[in-house]
Length: 465
Image (cartoon, rainbow, N blue to C red; front, top):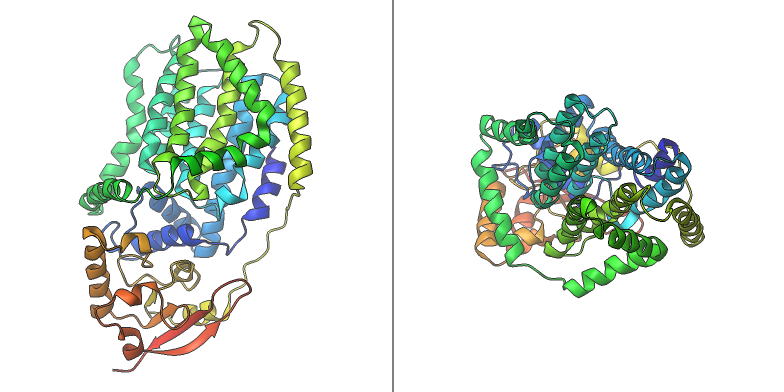
């Protein structure tokens, strides 16, 4: 399975492929490592797990582009191996695990949901699944239980709504281990990640900023619910359930059979709550970006395998029907998607703008081009403003947006960067500057780059005072 997972991951993830969110997270992490303070002058409205994890990779691999690739690959690879282990322990059949895992991987390493592999949902699911996989260890020792609880508790620190998945998973782990647990206080190990992150935030002077960010996110959700539930449900059906309808019907059937058995109800309900919470991440989010669907795409297969494991040896045999349905689904998916594996890592090639900026040691940069925050990492430059780019959602005409406009204007006017990257003549944020001609007044265009199927990139240099 490691072979298949690697081939699927390298189809999508390569050194230098850094999209909007990955560029934002990586740039904030890079600034926090290089003199900035998280949630103060290095800000994004995400939980600290993603930033501290990327900082760890940046410390291990000083080249930012390589570090981002290593992080993305590691997250998806961890999920892939965890899925296989969960399926193997659930099915207790090598043949069925080898059939079922590729199906799950095709919807886990799914282009629309994975992007550059640096989304918070990916790393949150990696820790959640790793925690569940360890809990299925036959030995069921105190050591494996503690590790399982710690990894499960980590998931919340990548995206706050994961708490709705963490709580039922902790209950499920308790039900799995209850016959061997002598001290229920052991479940306090699930709080160790929270204690660690809170202490780290406090030591770095970021705790109050983190609390303010949580308040901001409640406003962000409450006031920007753009995409309807109907649209989201339809996308979920078309992109996942419709393509695996036989497995969906099978899962509904075994769920119904399981709920008829009193001893299994609570375990199934816990797993079902995790599945519902994973879909709730999509419904509660203001938009319908592909990565919002990532948790439910992954956890559906975990849920199906777990319910199957509870029903083994009870009632009619389920193995043969599931083998047949898995073979049929694999055939249909291969016929539709023409799956190809890639095992080649393509070396990253710097473009001329990244090469030039990288040589400008000690110089500062601001990117007013929302999709190109990756230039901070590729040019090894710390963002001069409190946000790497002026992401429109954070600069709307509301109290928080107006406050952010004032803050970024202060950064630009008092710490005017040496270089500026935009697209066309100016970019999004320049329209809201108090001085609308600020860029033209203080900068001159010195280079540009037009890549296929991308908007032009324009490099400006600050004029001599």
